[in-house]
Image (cartoon, rainbow, N blue to C red; front, side):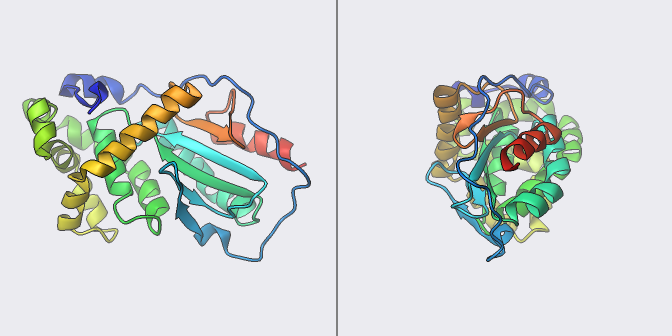
Length: 246
């Protein structure tokens, strides 16, 4: 596993507020005429992509948005809260935009939450993702009240190799109980948190963001395959969308 997972509890506390960053391109323009297609309920059409993200909407929409997001990033939580209703109602449901979320994991707590959000596959992913963002403040408060020596022990190479790390962080943050109310049993949650293939997939997704797109902060957005400069909030993204659909 990469070094970013091997952080102490002290380092974890420092990462909780460390999100955001500049992007370096303007984002791709829509091609051709942007026309609505309401022939299907696109909001309920969710699929997993070859790159490991989860995509909502018309796969042939003229505008494709990819968000690289961290579940321990406060700016990402704000984007999730502000964007959900207008993005789905005004763009995804009209068949003109599809929206994909890819995880950009930054620390063991983030990775633990990401594993749980992906635990039941594409069907409930967006609901779980939104609930985890909505619970972010409570998650931080809970884990900051946990025994810090125990958290440090969970970040050791021995704990990582034994599979205890992400189960332990999820327990300390109250996440297993949270997702238990959303259709993921205690046993299933623990299995997902110990899934090494899923951990490797999340690490690879992060590496792609770093190496292919030079992403250094979250949230970051690709619009039609190009990194969007100056877009890190819903008002900024919606302004860009309005430019593209007019």
